[in-house]
Image (cartoon, rainbow, N blue to C red; front, side, top):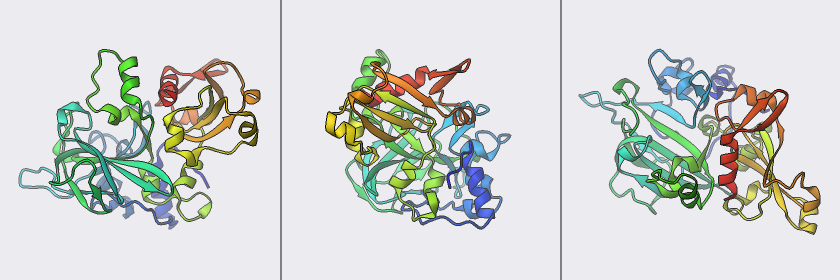
Amino acid sequence: MIFLIARPAALLTFLLLAGISFGQSPFQFPTANHALYESGADLKFLAPTTPDRPWTSGSFGCVRNDGWRMHEGLDIRSLEHDKRGEPTDPVKATADGMIFYLSNKPGLSNYGRYIVIQHLVDGLEIYSLYAHLSAIEPGITIGRRVVAGQVIATMGRSSSAETILKERAHVHFELNLFLNDRFAAWFKKNAPGERNDHGNWNGQNLLGLDPLQILQGERPGGKKFNLATFLASQTELCRVQVRATEFSFLKRYPTLVLKNPVAEKQGIAGYEIALNYNGVPFALLPRAESEMKSRAKIQLLSVNSAVAQANPCRKLVKQSGSRWQLGDKGLKLLELLVY
């Protein structure tokens, strides 16, 4: 059963209170804070943006600025502090993997000091990200293999954009798909004069999935958790057509490419792509020329209006009267995808 809800953490709390269990996830919690399992302990697990904000503002989704700002991870609270009140919690690898990127210069990103780890799970690449760190463990370097539960850093409050108060010290934790191997070149072309200090590992090139659902092993249809099945079961925001046949996402995520005998026989002229509300391409169907809907490079085919209205923060689509069209951010995302 697939639930459509703007605040997935609320769904999880309901299911736990109801005694409904999930399948075992291949991912572990990145800190010792497991308060999520305690009834009514949401504020012990997630750090809201300010004390007067609900705990949901520390969860994944359209949870900020009254639903108009996306938060692509979980802000998991600190449990341990030194005499000055600074967080000292060890931050751990969520699963076996390889360090693919790290930034030890907190002033260069809203993430502050952060680490990205690549994991191969159920035939898919997925990237975990750990942000606002105070320190990275000695020996944690790009190319280093790590195992689930291995300490990789210490929780902190580092950020280039804001002062994170001691009382809301947290690790910002994401689980992402990687969008395009040519991001750095695309950014240079489309944002001339703007800095990109992180190359392909700029946060704009990572598309987040809901970590709560994955950590808890949410299983469509009650089956054993499988990451590919989880992705394929995402709720569709919209469906688009692109006139492109060679882009890196296809090679990186072949499991998400569907079969189409017509295109196999006649040749592929483009792809029909399903996106969830955060813009994650979760199903890519090759199309033959005879099946293409228009000559446009990028064409919006359909919109799930209920999803668009419940989750408006990414502004991927917009409505003019009764007609839906791609928003500027939706068009930008798709141009990056096929670049």
